[in-house]
Image (cartoon, rainbow over all chains, first blue to last red):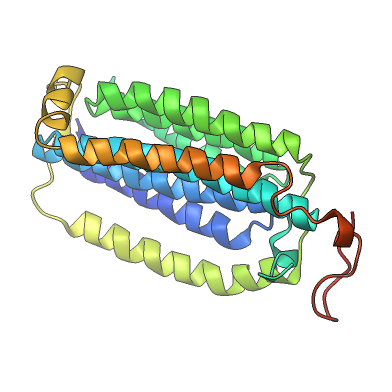
Length: 100
Length: 184
C-alpha cells in the first residue's frame, strides 16, 4: 500500500522543479515547457486527492486543466512564433521590450 | 507490485524532470517532458484514473508535445546561452523554491487522515466520469468548447504569416542603447 502523501510529495517536487526551470532556463520554449511541468505536478495532486476522497469531480477538474493546457499551448506557441518572427531570437533576455 | 510500479515510474518522472532542467537544447528538454508525462499516466492508472491516464498520453504526450517539438524544429532553436539573468535567477530563485518545497512538504507530511492507495481500489471508469461531466458540469464543459474555439482562432491569427512581421525594420537596431543588436 502506498500512502497518498507520497503522491502528493511527488507532485510538490514536480511543481518545484517546474518553478526552478522557469527561473533558470533562458530559452522561451523551455520556459514554456517548465510551465507545462508545473501544470502536470498540480494535476497529479488533483488525482491523488480524488482517489483519497473517492470523488469523481477531482478527476474532471484535471480534465479541464488538460483542456486549458492544450489551448494555452496552442496560443503560447503561436505567440512564440510571432515573437521569433519579430526578434529572430528565443533568448528571454533579449526579449525584454514590448515595443518592436 | 504497487510499490515497485510507483518507485519505478516516480523515479522515471523525477529523472525526466531533472533532465529537462539540465539539458541545454530544447529538443532534449521536450523529449524529457514526454518521459515525465508518460510516467505520470502510469501513476494516474495506479490511482484508478483510467480515463485520465489515456487522456494524458493522447493529449499531453501526444498532441501538446508534438506541437512543442514542431515549434522547436520550425524555429530551429539552438542551444541556450548562459547570461547574467540565469545567474540572478539561480541566486534568488533557489532559496525561494527550497522554502516553497519545505512548506508544502511539511504540510503534506503533517496532514492527518490521508489514506493509502492499493491496486485493488475501485477504478473510476469513463462511465462514472461522463455521468457527472454531462449532468452536473454540462455548462463548464460547453464553455471549454468555446475556449478551445477562441484558442484556435487566436493561434491562427497570431501565427499567420505577416502578423508581427516587419521586414522593413527587421535589420535595424531595435531597443535601448544598452541592448545588443538583434541579429538576423
